[in-house]
Amino acid sequence: MKTIYCWALILGSLFFGPFFVRAQTPAGEAIEVLDIRDMDIRDALQFLAERTGLNIAAGELPSGRVTLHLKGVEPREAMGVLLKTQRLAFEETGGLLRIISAEEYQARHGRPFDSDLVSRVVRLKGIPASVAAGLLEKMRTSSGKVIADETSGTVFLEDTAERVQTMAGYLTEIDRPLVRQVFSFQFAEAGPVAERLRMVLTPQVGKIDEDRVQNRLIVTDTDEVVGRVGRMVREADVPRLSSAIRLVYARASDAAETIRPFLSSQGGSVVVDARTNQLIVTDTRARIWEIEGILHRLDRKDPEVLIEAKIVQISLKDEFRMGIDWAAVVRRVHGLHLSSVWGGIGAGGKGSAMIGTLSDDDYRLVLEALGSADDTRVISSPRIAVVDGQEARILIGSTKPYVTTTTTTNLSGPVSVSEDVKFIDVGIKLVVTPAVHDDGEITMKIRPEVSSAAASLKTAQNNLIPIVETSQVETTVRVRDGTTLMIGGLIRDGRTSLESKVPVLGDIPLLGAAFRSRSSGKDRAETVIFLTPRIISGER
Image (cartoon, rainbow, N blue to C red; front, top):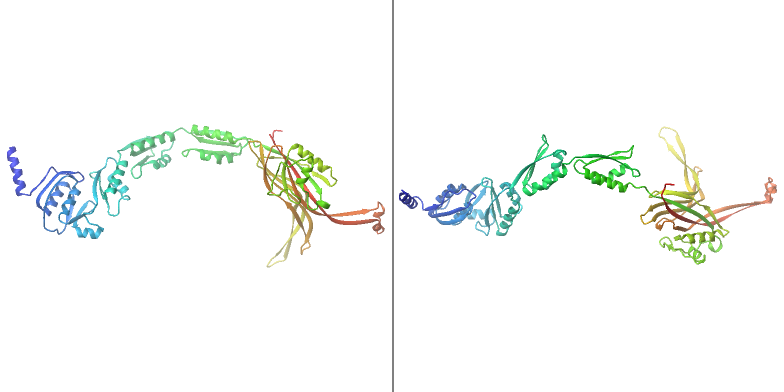
């Protein structure tokens, strides 16, 4: 019986088509052996379509016969070799291979069908063929092809040898078996967590399905990514606790803005109770411990600074009309020297503003030297305590009122006139803002000002507006606790009016004018300010 079967096979190959193929080969799988002997091109195409499952559409074809012997080739590669023998080509659209001439192919694609392009079929293990093809579309050249075959789970690549190798290597990296795992939540809500988990999924491959009824997530991705998702789920699905944290010194509303970035993105919250100055923090136990530690370090008592000021005024006469040369004065007092002088405000010479520091002993000696002069007087010795970072103001002088008039003309009514009384500060004004450092030093922003209303301006409504003359400096310095800061060079010009009379006789009407006299003149004075900042606890 075996002998009869063999002879039948031999005779069939001789009279009914000289070809031989070992078993039927599905599309996408390599053909083990393809042997075609002197067969018409149409019959060869029909045979190849029947044996491999390829969908082929052919129009008018040239007559010709084909002889091929191929081993281990993919059906599309075999089709390409077959067509090239007859100067034919094929185009693939939606799984259909359309047979055209090689000239028509070159006219459409701008390159010969038998160019240096190579092809390769990659069988996928996990990701869908359509997804893989979509990822590779951006990697192929303009003349390359990427075709997905969902039925066989393969991707057909046609491009330059280097590009095909690159695309195949990329597929090897991303094509891993997909696993599916269900994550159930006990404490957190699955929906908000899913939004965060989607950021770690493999693009176009991984997916998350939400089951809101059972509060769970179904994750599909590679084993590595699913493991990472599991760790994130365990971190998110922990019980939430609430803790009331009372603040003693810090303001609760300010502290809430400080700790908000440290809250968990899933379920963390903070509520401010302004009445009791407390924060109600809801989060995981570990986060609450972390936030409590932060608030403990921030909720500190603000230090206070006691500023001892002494304001001295010196009348400038004769050779000192342009101001006192403070650097020379200090050197002449027992050979003392300023600890430091800021040249940005003045070099400490005559007629220039000067700021410098003195030790305690030097400070007392300078005060004694100034007090011994007849033209020197201490105007005020204020002491003021201020909280770290806040502004302290000292005003020694007066508030000058002046009137402004506003006239309003109505279209259908009388003219209305209104007066407004305003005030302006004149005299000696000192603004100090201290900042305490951990090393015991104090940074002070200082703005001293000496002003006077030397004259007035009369308006059309007979209102007198004071003309204020001002001498002002502004600086920021850093000194140690207890160091005295001396500010000089603040010069003010004023007018003096002096009346002299004989007692009793000078007060007689009419006749008293012969026994009294009046004189006026200008005076010039320099104001010197001594500031000594001291850090205090604020408990006394």
